[in-house]
Length: 381
Image (cartoon, rainbow, N blue to C red):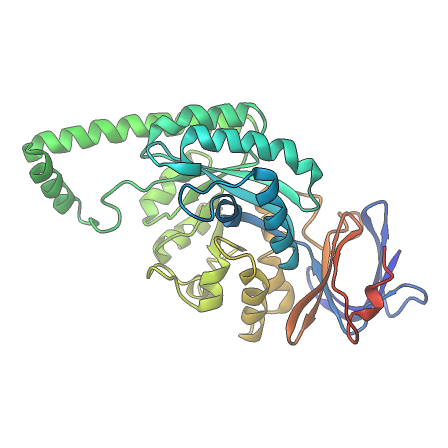
């Protein structure tokens, strides 16, 4: 089957009028110009399917209100409709394994949910993958994470560190004084306790990271705030730095050969909603490799085309949500419009920005009805 007459965004250039042939679920051929008899895509832009490495949106579908937990199959169906409409064809669903938290993020609940998603993902149109988030300050979650890893359910593991003292207590001495007063201990005893606890947490984290590496599961860090933290993560085998909070951390991640991932909502807004590093600033300093949906799937395309309007070449901007995340996750079979790769792609209208069709492995999984631009797609598939 030919998709004919679209504007194709290739890895290094844009073909203003070109056609793409699908065969056996793969991209078989790309040819400049129109191909008679193909699905008419004139007026539309064709880009690879979006690869999202970190999306929290399914958690919101599963638990729309605290304590209100919906059936997984029901939540997955509603979530999938949203991500397809956003042009996402490969989605890494983020699940947190966090000892001490209630609801879905409790380790035992996250493990049960991982098992359910693993059983259901063969029934989805989107290629669903699991991004397990392990909280290093709560090592009680390690057992559940290790179980999920060994069962083969995890496709990406991130190491989160929400230890108190990194945000409101950036001054270590102020943190020690606070804890000493809180628990009635001397400052010396408080420091000794913190050091022992930190060493214990580090050992557990290293064991979890080692298991992931042995199983071939890529590792990501989370909210890196200093170059020293980035270097520690790099020594553990981390290859993706998610949401570095400071430019110095992002630059160190690049120096360590890591991919730097930032939130698409951040890139779209031009700033972090909590005052951390701006994705656009990271981009200006060549310290931005890929975008993730974080909490808002619809932000991916809008952030990408917004960057293109600011001067990024369209292939470079589109790579942030396609080629680069696929490479970071070790997915060599997708992420670019190249013959031999999976025929996962999105046909969209650029102005106003609107998804018209989504194909996964060469099959149309979403085609919007309508007249005018994109109406020639209705007979595709």
